[in-house]
Length: 129
Image (tube, rainbow, N blue to C red; front, side):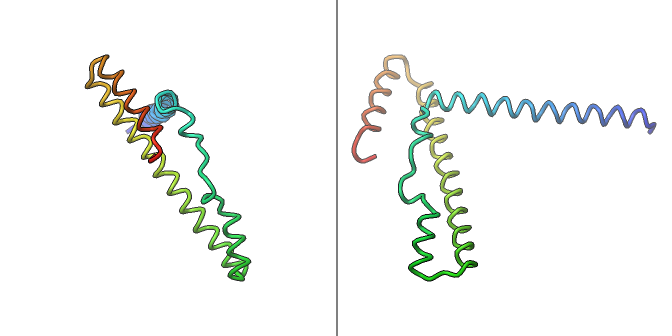
């Protein structure tokens, strides 16, 4: 094969990869906007509560258990990892709920959609949630 042909293929491969990554970024940005509009930013920005204060929790454990520096750093690392996994799971849960809601809405007619929205609002306001 000639060098010109190889250079041409490299350029095409680069262009294709660039297009794929750019399209992925655009699709991700669009999906995020759609998700925020349908689920609501309040769900995404909801405070996580007192159990998600790893530094304070580890500091308290450090004092109570008399942890050395290595133990402290390792414990903080474990807590950080667990919190990241929990955040990923919460995001997946929110996306699953949103997807299910959208799929159900496509099945229903306009009147049923309105009733379904009212039912969802009642469920989200109930004290069990």
